[in-house]
Image (cartoon, rainbow, N blue to C red):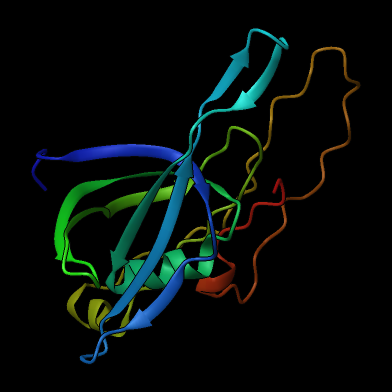
Length: 175
């Protein structure tokens, strides 16, 4: 991966990722991330949303299936990838330019919530090409620091995901 046109965006998904398959059976997930700064309106002294920036994005292959099965509308994400320009003509024949992020990495932001991660099982092709590996460790919940004044709660055993599919690999109850 070259560093040309690589950007990072933090924002919210405008819809669930849309998973499709090419004619050759290659999975691709399309999504849109909206980023909007909070600005202080000095006349009312209230915080308001600034102008939103919408960025279309795509992710390919097994990664696309992971994204489509893990992320949902409204979820805050951090995505990095290569910015690509697409030139086209609209219905009236006018030249137009659009931009799309080809995602290299994406994940849920932990700024406003917690999540758990479950490593996906290797695909059949990867298993036959790779030597036998040690068993995958179970996911552990991510927790927020406890306030100093809060009384200590008894430790509960960490939930162990059983039969978790790629569609259940990442959850975020904060949204």
